[in-house]
Amino acid sequence: MATPAPAGYDFPVDQLHTVPLAHNAKQPVVLVACGSFSPITFLHLRMFEMAKDYIHLHTDMFVAGGYLSPVNDAYQKKGLALAEHRINMCELAIQTSDWINVDPFEARRPTYTPTAKVLDHFKHELNEVMGGVDVEFANEWGEIRTEKRPARILLLAGSDLIQTMSEPGVWSEEDLHHILGLYGCVIISRAESELDTSIFNSSNVHSRSPLALYRHNIFLVEQLVRNDVSSTKVRLFLKKGMSVLYLIPSEVVRYIERMGLYRAGDSRKGSARDLTALSATTSISSN
Image 1 (cartoon, helix red, strand yellow):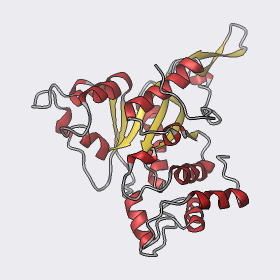
Image 2 (cartoon, helix red, strand yellow):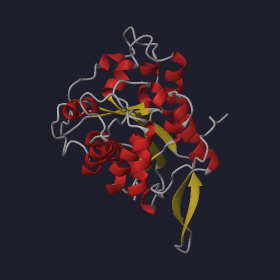
Image 3 (tube, one colour):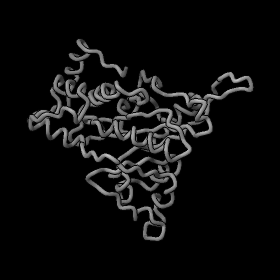
C-alpha cells in the first residue's frame, strides 16, 4: 500500500528523460538522494553526475532521471532549516540541471518517513501510477515510437551512510533488507572517510548481514576529484560570517542571505513569516 501523499501533492516529472533509441536495451534507472540538504552543496549535485557517469560507463543501465528528497522537519537534526526553505534551496540549486528533480513528498508529509518507504513512494509513482519511463523503439519502417518500461530505483548516498548500515541498532534489519534487496544503492566515496570494504566480505562475521547478502546491488563509486564540502561545514562558515561562495550554488547563497538562515546566535530555522515575505517578492522555480 502506497504511503499517503501530502495535500496538493503532484509528483514532479519535468526532468524525467526518455531512454533514447541507442540505449533501449539498457534498464532504465532513477537515482534518489534522501537527505537534509541544509543547505544543499555542490557535492550533493556532483554525486548525481558521478553516479550517472559510473552507471553509463560500467553497467547495462541508463539513468532516466534523478530526485532530491529533502527529509521531513520531524527528523529534528541539528542545523535543519524548515522544510520549505530546504525545498526552495534545492529547487534553486537544480536550475542548471536538465535531469535532476526535487520531490517535496517526504518533506511535506505530516510525519517522518523512513527511507525504505520513500523508495516505495518512487516505485509507486514511477512504475505503478505512470507505468514506467518512456523508452524509444523503432519499427520495421524506421519510425520511432515509445513504450513504457519499469524503472529501477537506486538510493544515492555517500559512503558514510553505507558505513552506518553496518553498525548495530542504527538501521532496522527489515529496512536494510528492503532497501538493499528490493532496490539497491549507489555509494559515492567521501574524501574524509574511507570505506571499510570488509563489511561486504562474506567470509567474515558480516557474512549474514544485508550488506554482504546484497553486495551485487551496491555500486561503489570513487571520487576522481576529491571534494569534502559538507552542509555542516557550510553552516559553520555562515555562523562565523565567512564566505560560502563557490561551495554552494550562488542562487542558494543569495537565498540564505535573504532569509537570514544559519546565522550566529540565531536559533530560528526560518519562520513562516520569512517564507511569506519571500513569496511576495520572488518566484522560486526549478527551471
